[in-house]
Image (cartoon, rainbow, N blue to C red; front, side):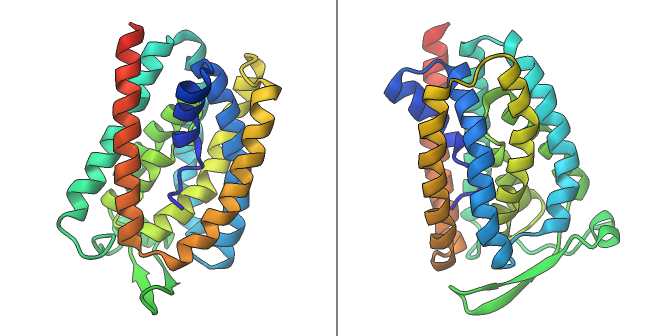
Length: 260
């Protein structure tokens, strides 16, 4: 429902509830993200919420960042990873909260900028909760691409898919409706996660006894969430997003500081 791929929630739960080391939790999560992205993307593409052109364009930067982050994971300590993870979640939560206070809708409409206009990145979709067809443009495309590269690095380092940064970037920076940002993020994170999953496998961070049940559970949740989003307003999705990221971000930072 939030375009996170599940990794943003999976990693903290595996660490705090089951005591799994963060590198093993990230390895299981990155494989699950590939599966959940594929499951949810089918529904979103069918409902024409996914902006395929924008997703493929931003994925150029995100995949490069994911490979960079995955290679860095073996040289970064667990406490540092937790703090980085927490800060990235607080950034995303704060950005979306500040924007949502000023708006009745889940996004601020922007026309296509020069690059988006040339690449025809704008689009439209039918919102069943509002019973209207919504047309939107894509603004600040270069800035959104830079943030997507950073999201890729975070994804590769932490095994979360990068949705916690991609969705706010598309929604707050580019001016894309929340539902489209969620659907496009789901489309993108499968590619991002697959690019870094091979590196996790190479380093031996994918434990089969942890990964297999995680993937099965996450797949079931992805099918359910992709169907529920049709009946939920974009503003409500945004509020859920802000709350979940705030709680998890603070928890991860505190745990990282305690490990130092």
